[in-house]
Image (tube, rainbow, N blue to C red):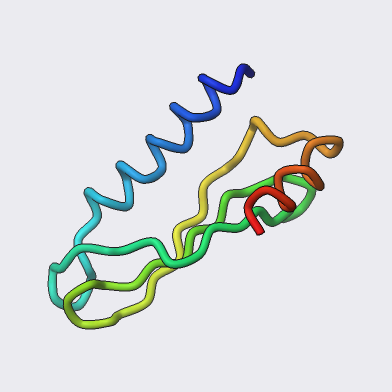
Length: 80
């Protein structure tokens, strides 16, 4: 995957977050923290969000096929 492909993938993740209304009040979520975790050997983008209206917290998990074991450490350093 090229960096352009990766950025489109991440953009689509934020589109999902922006298009998802808060479960409590229908407000908009704001991304607070983005990290990469490996669950059962599969890398995921984990985005912790908070509702801008009521403060409800929600975590979004997206499969991250662009992360391989060699680049996982580099990606974590960039995101942190």
